[in-house]
Image (tube, rainbow, N blue to C red; front, side):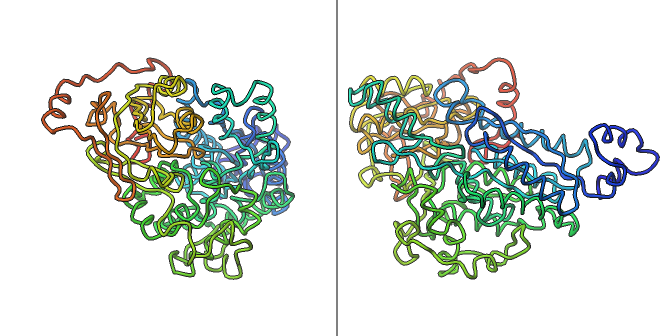
Length: 553
């Protein structure tokens, strides 16, 4: 065991002495697996507020299987709370901080294995990145999705809260109704109730094989979730004894499967950032072209909010990710030989699984769409690609051409939309919100929700080098690469320029003559950075483009 090198023998007496100070016993040190239980609990984030219970179950499982659990923290930022202000610069950038901190704690203390307890948007991919980077026995266990909210007999969730701001400004709701809605939208702890980024990544952790089946959908408040945590603690000890490491489980086919399921469930567009970043840690290249290639041959089987009216609880009752994979396997769209941390192949895990509700998970022969939920567009605006959640775009906006309304920040755009400056037919352009220019590649949920709330979602598109919440719906096209801060055609779009978008044919172009584009690019001057000190300055200097997963290189 790795821990023996740190704690065993006469030459490591000082290390043992320090562990004895924590109540560890002489008969345990260096003889039992030392398991890091990485707990992203905090008292701010609802997705993480209940993780003490999960951690206790994990530690019970580790101890009962013959290991020594040692718990330590990881930070967790709530994208929802960080939304619509300067705080939104930090969530994506925190992904690297989390992975780096787990690396530091693990290697400094000679841990034999890891149980990674996560739940929300950037924490889940960060912990999988750390697992693949360190490549020691590891298993991920999530906190689960929250209960579905209801307001006056209708479903409500976090994403629709922001849309209600427009309802208030239009006089459709008063302050007391707004407050009632706020009390109704998030009724329990857990990750947000729709197929937003957190739940998308928790679901895909199962497919990749780093989490036990059921990890993505078991509700946060179910006893089954606690049982899963205990089983994860027990299983990590077996992984240590077998010396089964993450890179023994995950390969390129695992990522093919994950992207295929992602397309079937219409997962968050942020998966196009996180899956390549996770793969990067395993020296596996995943590019945007692969997402589009797989999307074109994968039917969209689920419309979970924001793509439809169903929620994660409905998805769980219908059979969850194993049921989706079982349905996809009817047309041999998955590699069934990939492994899961439970020791079984994907094929073995889904052998007896059936869909329990074909209204929630469509039959493979009756999909919502013959193509997947995400599309990759290219053109002179985005020669390296950009991303749209096609499943959440209404038919009227799949092909659209209109004049640009140009803004250089999320706040400026949202205010303008709420003020009525954006009219039917317009295309909202938000520049300098990319990984470098933001910095931090902020989510544009405020302006996209403003478009929906102002009843413009069937008439107005939005394009940006920023990113979107998994809760975003409408013709919202993000991750434009190269970003405006790096120059290129996107950086020189002006008010009134005609932009043509064709999601069906995967194109996005600025309809301006080449000589004018050339002249503007020659005159373009890189703007001063928006942030001049602190972590984000260092981050902006090292972060890659969105089409490469916004990894720190």
